[in-house]
Length: 99
Image (cartoon, rainbow, N blue to C red; front, side, top):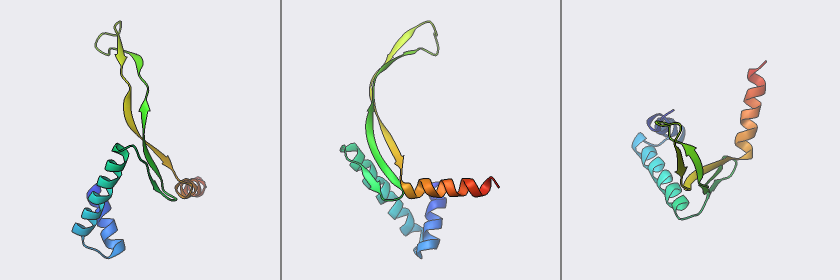
């Protein structure tokens, strides 16, 4: 599902226009991005938590010259930890689909 499809589903379920649903999604993503950039985390109870963490630097291999070693610097990455409700619903759908 892409952003336009998600906005369409939200518009149908919440009785708002597609434009309003797109604006809400844009606002949500903007707030999440700004919060994570500032070092905070965003928790949507039952769904999950978005946060940033630093992936430590390491030594890698140059894909163009496999014999050459390169240093990969530390970098910030987004981390998502699924919430209990999301995990439980996935487990429930998994157990019913395997029957």
